[in-house]
Image (cartoon, rainbow, N blue to C red; front, side, top):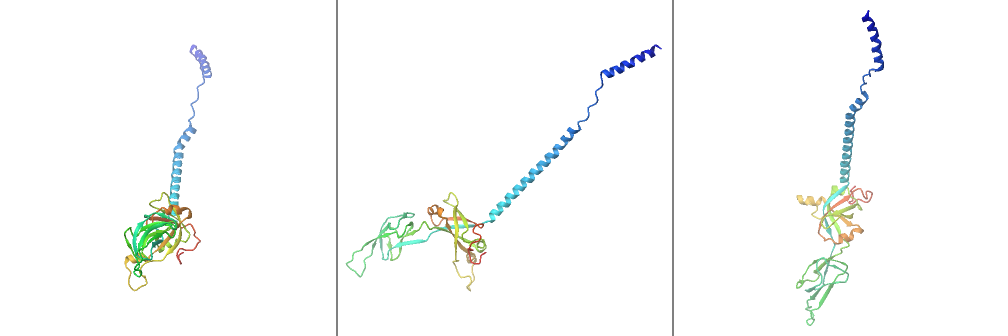
Length: 274
């Protein structure tokens, strides 16, 4: 009896203890946080893939544009700076006694170039040899002193050769295939020795072939065939580049790049080219 009574008293005490200090429930698993973390590698992979694809696209576009830009230009090697020669001499023979200029000297029209002592005319036995002063007929630059002091000159033989430095041009050979892409008036640029930056020029005209007749009975050699497959393209400096080109020496070789995107609707450089 005594044990039963004590048991009945203990149960309320246990219940009251449970009510006074309730047991905290087990924490719920952090499912949301684990889901976010599990998605981070996938998002990172996606971003890396997008960046790689974008880089590949930009690189491909650059290569394509670069190739298109290259295809828009026709490059001609060995564009030689040329000038029309203007010989200065005398109609009579004689001896050069004095030279007043040197090569690459710029002269004005009428400027004294040299003095020569003309030979006496045999028909006039008493006539003394006379001295003639050679003068520049036009403004220009001395390209060559043909006969030095003390040299004998013949009648009509040049003593000095001038050229007009304001009318220089570049001559470059081109194949018929290249000429099909060229038209008169196309813009081009010249680069090479003595130039700090490319010089703007334009396609002015095309000169005829020089060499044996390809229609002749005699067979052409390989070198002659190569010559006949080419024509000479003449490029003239733009007005704002004349001063730069005039400081160069004729005979120097440069590289010409012709922009085929310019003057597309103008007259072809060669008849029948298109």
